[in-house]
Length: 287
Image (cartoon, rainbow, N blue to C red; front, side):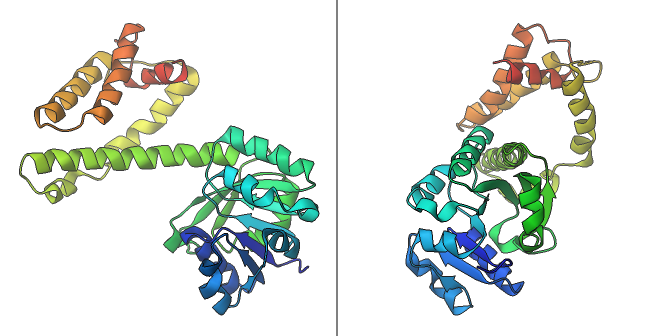
């Protein structure tokens, strides 16, 4: 077993990108996937195909997983027997912080160490300058393999709690997915009005005004104090109601804007009407 070698299990678009990056960095790379044909191109590029998942795990001290979720890890590694002993499993699959902590215990019972991760890059950006990867878990295990992991993106170690990487990762995805959905809702409004959605692009990107609001909002949430002199919940809630009405009047699905409005409605019921809009966090934190 070569100390600088790596095994990659899971050869979807992200997994294949990681393998190509490891190979370009000169790392001996063993690969395995349930659909074996996905490895053909990578084998042609220099990767070594493992016959079984157990063989793949046995081949390298560092085992990188790029799977749909943590259940897939159990499905694949559950039959590898003693092969996991002594391995560092870097799981870059998406799941919850609690699922990640449970996986750390499961691997620990089998003699392996989990380093959890979240890749902040699309498959075509893996290995590029803008790619970064969040990690949490054993500092010793992370440090031992950081030179190899650095090939796929700038590593950022968050702490020993295995759930930290997924906490940060899912919070990032929450902003990403919600923002994309909001843009599509606005595009649909233009389309419903018979106006090309592209005409909205000039004012679609989040401006500096949004970015400027975030530090004060984060501070308010941390301190639990929500001054409302500039934009209180009653005022913002009225705006949210108008947004729902505009979408409804155009015959569009209102699930997304109605969900936002519901936060304002509940905040008002709880007595936050004169507080700043960041007090919606109290509704979110205490449903």
